[in-house]
Image (spheres, chains in turn cyan, green, purple, red):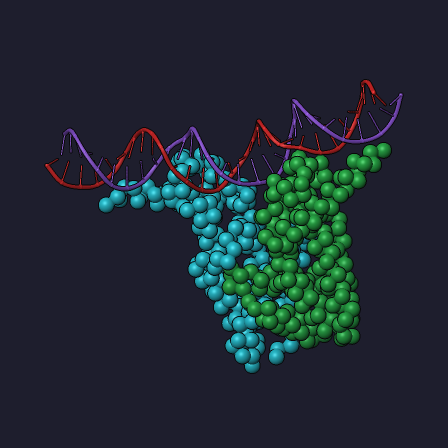
Length: 199
Length: 199
DNA sequence: CCACCTTGATGAACGCAGTTCAATGATAGG
DNA sequence: CCTATCATTGAACTGCGTTCATCAAGGTGG
């Protein structure tokens, strides 16, 4: 069938994702503009809309890749972590922090993308999130062997959210952000203190 | 001097803040439009810019009031809380949560407002934040009497950020938000577990 | 290999924001 | 009351995402 066309579309799709990824990483989500994109990709503005529904779709494609890189970094840190489950939590949380710090604008784009109210997050997002939760709940189950599964799930979510909050506010320069070392320190403080009494 | 003019300006300023506050509370920050605002206030679009530098300035004025209400709610909860410092932390954190849940769009506007990169947060923001931090650090100092002041400051910030993260992700419907009860439960879990071993 | 038709690509034009500023109207001092 | 000064106005400007009538290319049957 329209093989030629499909190949061209796929190539344009990839090219747009690469350009958008670089733009977001360097200048943030707000710097993503249809005309600039078309200029850099050497296509018409309308061509973007032949390949993506709108710029939000393109942003989501970039975010999927960012989230995947994030998950890979955390997994890598976990693989290299010591046996101790508390240390595993600390190492993973700090890997999350370092990813966010090193990919600040891309990481922000994960949360700043406009989502139509009441619409569920895309599947890849929930899947990637579930993977992260598994990394957390495994050590947690070792640390708190007597807790119910449901309680562990809440703990997992709570700890992830806590670390996320520390990183979010810590990296926010405007509201008197905090040095990288101090963020790592806060993460370790919370996790160690949290797991200090294992019951 | 220009008393007539100044009075008129002050009245317009107040009227715009009230209208913007209602608009944000009901339909979110993205529903704030200069023409609608002028229409509702019965003034020209340009008049907005005689009184506020731009719409972000107006949003910041609304945010100052929101943040102040938030602080008042937390203070009220603290005043009605038991003596036990751990319970004080839990009560305040849940007050934070309930404010965010009951004023979701206004609360979101606190963080969603566009801030020029590299620019510090306004003074009222830092002051209000400092007040919240004091509410937290006082019970913390009772719970952890042997910790250094610097360490306590980090703990304070870390705990605030943690609760903020739990509320933020918990209220986010798109990424499979969580029921109000479960958010309260997560907050209590984290704070109680965190303070279970007092050292 | 050509003629035809279907399908895709194009970019000027549209709608809708925030913001500006020349023209108009009000204010206050003489 | 007059006039110089200042405030207000809203049409116009700019910049954005998005659309769609127009044109070009691709594939197909003869």
